[in-house]
Image 1 (cartoon, rainbow, N blue to C red):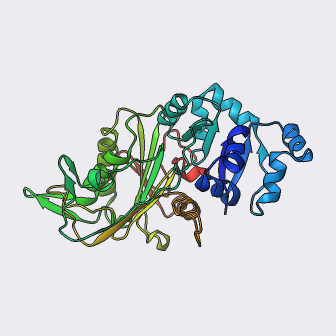
Image 2: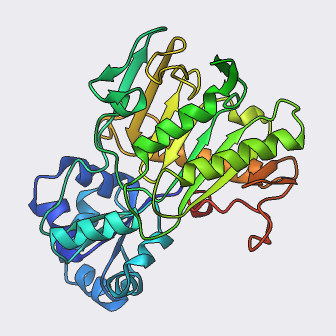
Image 3: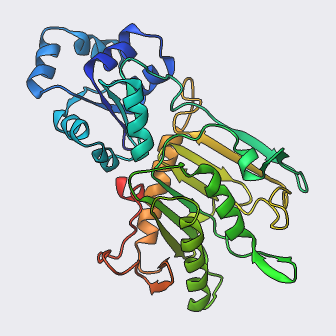
Length: 351
């Protein structure tokens, strides 16, 4: 399993691993990560040879890997923050102010921390909720997904939802059949998408096509593309994948720093009011190193990495029907500039 990648100025590395009180990040650094430092290869080796902090780090923590020198990426990011997007599931500890760090992560959807203002819980919170049939989820103006997920969502610039039965169910509203999945996806994304972003956001939806005609797939994809893009002022690239696979049984949502799932799928709320639970369900919405200390088995990061690799393998195979906008392609994707006919989603292309 690939390591979580951390980019850290050496003073942040020293603070987290030796000087400060950061139990969550300390465990992530020493047990689950490859750390890239803003040092030259010679500076890194000199520190080890002189028995400096990196030397003691390696001898104190048996699971820790030798940090690597990678000054080029730091130079790229300091020069232009858009270079953060090339590593969409990494975290950065930079020698900048907190305000500058907040501006970078809000602009590009990647977690950036100031070396002088480090949040130990940034990767470690979790959420679980059991949902009963006909339960109403509301609090004043907050209905359904907006109240269910009424907590801070980490920065993101991409997401994938895999739910085999996402578009299988309709509800009669005013004499018209309305797709329950489509409505729930709009409500869910309206909650979790960042308010603003300086790069294109990537959304990939994966569902079976239930042997429906290409015209049906095109209609679903076209309306999803339009309605999702209408949620935010920035551009959103929407990919809709129709395929059946035994590997997609779990109904899951993956974001840059989130591994989430709904037991019975994401069509959680009735269309008629957007707040009444359709049937017994539960939701987990966890950051990638939630319950990281004293945790047995896979981390959320490892679980999401495994899932992304399966999605990449399966969806880029010839059996997929992948749709963008109103066009339908058998065993291909998108057309236009995406000539390699593979998923564009940057999370998939990070594994």
